[in-house]
Image 1 (tube, rainbow, N blue to C red):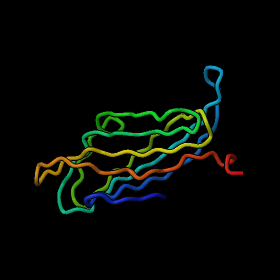
Image 2: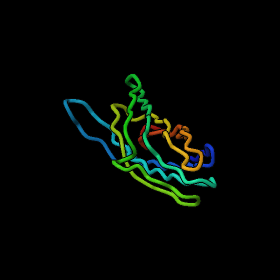
Image 3: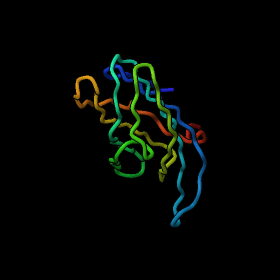
Image 4: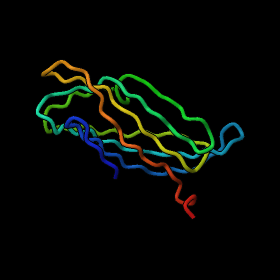
Length: 128
């Protein structure tokens, strides 16, 4: 598990290799990840949007921006957490992801960024 805390918001990531398949005459490697966002601050916060940088060892980085996470914009009171699972496809067995969440603090009404730590995506057979 990879973790990082930014301004009292703890991000934890667990990854998994889901398998391979052919699509458009190319091999693809499927990875899953589960993210837990835990509010360790004293203020209520809301996640409003996300930014991802996806690195594939055989391609240029991809950048993904969007509202919320999997269709939700969770509000977290102090001590609460929100978990979700998602995934990505790479054209190589090795890659990585990192990014940030844009959030708003309900007490101060200030917007702030919470960093998602870089996590590796690696098919088990690629390590041999």
